[in-house]
Length: 345
Ligand SMILES: Cc1cc2nc3c(=O)[nH]c(=O)nc-3n(C[C@H](O)[C@H](O)[C@H](O)COP(=O)(O)O)c2cc1C
Image 1 (tube, protein in one colour):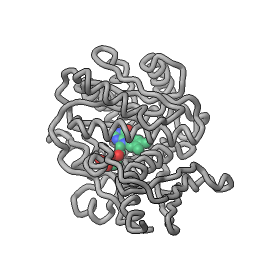
Image 2 (cartoon, helix red, strand yellow):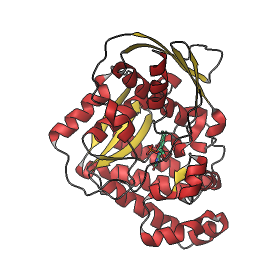
Image 3 (cartoon, protein in one colour):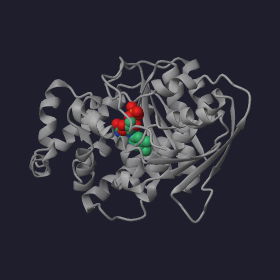
Image 4 (cartoon, rainbow, N blue to C red):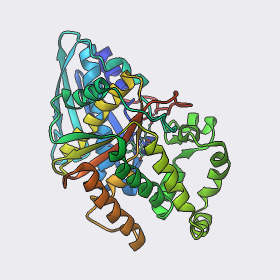
């Protein structure tokens, strides 16, 4: 069974993570995997109380559970097995079981973000049904999914516009993004983390301009001429080009619920992949609205966050904390896929 443990971890590391930081570390002992958080991998303002990383860990756990079933292993999962160590995210104990065909297994390696403009149009009712079933299928508690179509997507479009604007109006968010851009294939291959510039799917003119935006003094200057509103308008257009916006809300902000939100996100994303649909997580600001501290944000940033909070409760139709926002649609394949660190256990 030990050979399979490596395969199960290989499935885990295919999970999405904020700016592809891959905030995980694994320890293997016999038929057991211990999953740890590595806080220094994601120091972003978005990662308040490690919540962005907890979402990534949730997705990683879901991949491991799916892979275990495929490899005839029954998995017993425990979150935070050592309460005194909050970085010890989960323990999975495996025992021999029956091999089960899981429709999501092949989607694990095919899943990827697609930031291109989508082609609009409605999703078939069956596709929507399957996405809802995928979200609830594993009995994940503490979070729920809402899909918005047609004009209901407009609030989501306004939220992502605020989100992208904020990246160019806050020096910490701006720095974190640009520190994680990998400017050419050689750099992407050498670091195997961060955002390969090609995954941003920039239009040719933006591709020329984007490197200039690395200079925050220049960004501050062009902001006076409304440049960040142009960036915001682009994000709004991307959301409007989708067939549906998705919102995952959580019942409360316990660490377990952020893990569950990550598991639900991964199941939805795998189902979309299985259906040949494109998927784009556009969630920066949803991770800022629940910060209980204003640290790192100035008054003008805070007023954007406040606007987003109002729009979010309008879009989700509830006061429940919102964990994640994404868009789904039809589109050509993305230009390239992100890499992962070589596996070390
Ligand atoms: C918590 C979290 C937040 C994310 N937020 C965004 C986002 O706001 N915009 C975006 O384009 N991608 C976002 N991503 C996607 C990651 O950038 C992406 O998963 C990562 O670069 C790896 O690429 P892959 O998903 O194609 O494997 C997020 C991922 C996670 C887990």
